[in-house]
Amino acid sequence: MVENFDEWFHDILEQADITDSRYPIKGMAVWRPYGFQIRKHSMNIIKNLLDKDHDEVLFPMLVPETELAKEGIHVKGFEDEVYWVTKGGQRELNEQLALRPTSETAIYPMYSLWIRTHIDLPIKMYQIVNTFRYETKHTRPLIRVREITTFKEAHTAHATKEESDEQVQDFIAMYKEFFDDLGLAYLISKRPEWDKFPGADYTMAFDVIMPNGKTLQIGTIHNLGQTFAKTFDITFEDKDGEHKLVYQTCAGVSDRVIASVIGMHGDDKGLRLPPKVSPNQVTIIPILFKKGKEEVLAKCAEIKEQLEAKGLRVNLDDRDIRPGKKFNDWELKGTPIKLELGPRDLENNITIAMRRDEEEKIELALDDDLADNVIKLLNKSSENLSNQSWTFQDEHVKFTDNIDEIAQLVEAGNVVSFRWCGDEAIGKEIEEKTGYDILGIQEEISEGKCIASDNDAQYMALIAKTY
Ligand code: PR8
Image 1 (cartoon, protein in one colour):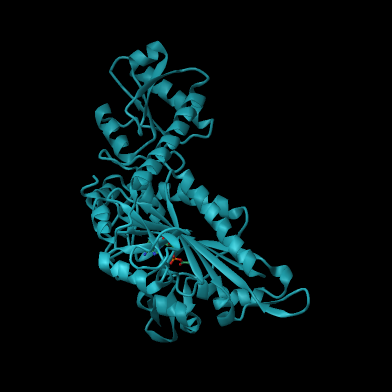
Image 2: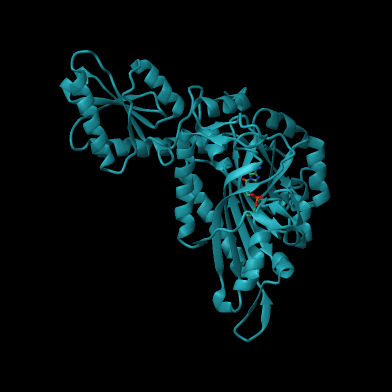
């Protein structure tokens, strides 16, 4: 799987009924029922986190060209990626309309109307929408799509720069919680100047390391400073009656999060889904013989009810096919726990539990504690997936002081950390020489020399092969 991860990833999406890429537009796939459930559960997690502190809104999908074009740096960053609506029926539109690639230019003109005085601040809103980007790099389902179907974008405005910096930290904490729930290990870095969001003062990014060693950016938080406030005239009257520009931030995560869940946890047999997002947390597989069939099925239905009463998502696979096929299907689809029940188990009043993340088979008594015991196993499974991800990451970040060693380490499937002076020209030189991307800086340091110059090092930085 590690050797041909891209192929594995492509195949598993089809085999496990996640998405179907045969839709006749490049970069746009169909969510199939099983994938849609994973999408729904993961969306609910982030939605609940956002709901604590943000108001949900919904803006139109079309943005007038005049608004999109207002913020020069921003539009430059997106101009090659915008889809345009130019006609209404047979008529050319007076003004062409952009399909939002992201919604700054849709939202901020309205913020300018809504924000009047300091009591309107902070404003914290989010929406979960589809956005469109005419990506020119190789498209891949979930990873680089032209229609992002679950773009969770949050937009905030504040009275002071300090508050906006705090907001960035709050988003980081929120995304950590989200990714922790999915058992994903992540690297956090401050993107280099040349790779920040168009129009941002600075960008903080979360990256995961996929099994083939390539990194995937799965979430970004941008401090927008006052750039958009100036462009869209977003001002407020402060306590002293003075008119001031707001400070803004925005943050976003996409379908890529699901790609990471699939990629980071999967194995040769298929998906290994974290219980929090798995469509079925438990799949019950009856082992049926002619004799005692009714009793076994009745008991399975009873177990299903017992577990559902504790809030679990349970599937009873009573399809008329061989149990072996059912086991394979659910291995492939990654149900965290399978419960097997045959006539002999029924006689012994037990069921055999199998965790997808481990080989071990566990006997559970069919008593009142069954649901609690299953929940314990689910928790262990979550924890194990998370530990495995973090261990993988720890083993795949390697430090070097020698620029000539970077290629060898990256080609062996690692992300490389190195000391850097922070100079942009030197940074670009490092990228050019190695052919990889600097993800960003992890922390400030005060020891050692830059890997590529005589300058003192300022930062510990990361470089990788990226998606
Ligand atoms: C913003 N504005 O837009 P960002 N396919 C899948 N996922 C993608 C793609 C793609 N083609 N492009 C980006 N992403 C800001 C923040 C509102 C919200 C994912 O930021 O352009 C990446 O994981 O950095 C990225 O981190 C996230 O969307 C946000 O996009």
